[in-house]
Image (cartoon, rainbow, N blue to C red; front, side):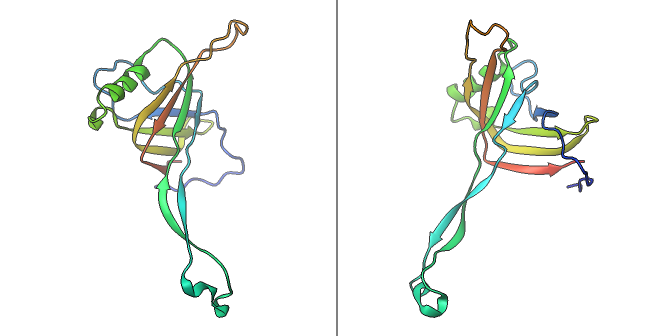
Length: 166
């Protein structure tokens, strides 16, 4: 992992790309490009609380709870983009729906890369064993003719790693 260069100003949040590392058999065209928003690049541990019987003895400072590290969890990563007529995301979701036991067909590594002002990568979130668990179509409203039709893709993954590249 490369060490990032120190900066006075933070990076802008609008300059990022989504990359589906391995293409999916049977789906033509770009699958993971042109997203306008990415959220849910989080990770957390469940907290296990417990207390031993001797924890209430006066020399141990009385009544308290010990906290241990529990299971690691990652929320769904939510990606949004304008609908262009390409049905690749729907096809990916169909593979999951029609062949849920065949994980090798649909599980992929996905990278979300933040770029600097010169479009150089500076930080990447690597989603391991990602697959589409929800695909939402747009909210259609005839009263707002200037609005873009947005589709939302939720990817669940087993792990998120951060790779510094700048």
